[in-house]
Length: 169
Image (cartoon, rainbow, N blue to C red; front, side):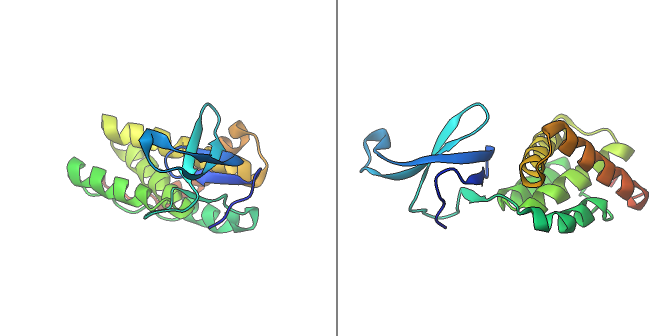
């Protein structure tokens, strides 16, 4: 996928950023190639224009699609497996897909689990990071401040609370 300078994008590991330019560079003594220079909140990353393998960048979620994601956040959470190692692998696999819907589902499911059973340290970290990334992208897509987006997401999760699983799985 080709992106334009000044276009907002989502880096799968770093979140929402803006294409500042397309530069030619040679990192680690490799052959020079073109990179998107992506400026994030507190850093800059360079992503090869000619992607090899899994794409690191995707387009920002369009505002018109947010209603579908509201429904995901309100929906009945998926019960997560009890085994913490398998749960961690499952969550990381889901997040690695890099889609906005997978981010919504991880936040929804871990939030529901936290309501019935305290999260372990890794689950808590995963939830904090996923929620922060979800809030940043929602903010950018819907034209809200970060605080407004976080409150909106929390309200949607509360709406779905009545559909939460009854056991901590």
